[in-house]
Length: 105
Image (cartoon, rainbow, N blue to C red):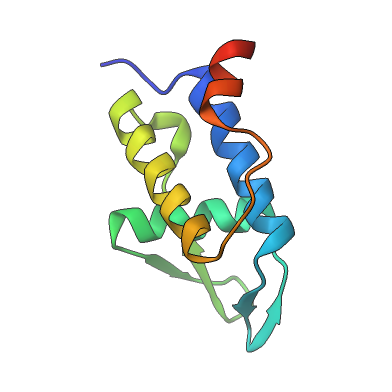
């Protein structure tokens, strides 16, 4: 089974960075900008409609996300489509579109 492509990975990180720069999110009761990696965790959990939660070492909880590096091309496309949907709901202006990415690959 083929794994995600480099072009898909590049587009994912571009999209996640755009979300991180433009969409504040509620974390620990405070609305704030969060990192692209935080957005990866949120969108992969949202796509899969599940969250895995582990107890933290010194209390609290840790949300465990899905590994995008293990996704197939089809699964990654579903994630990219979901990220596009989330961004659309928040009127994100994408810095890289699919056509640009294909032209640069």
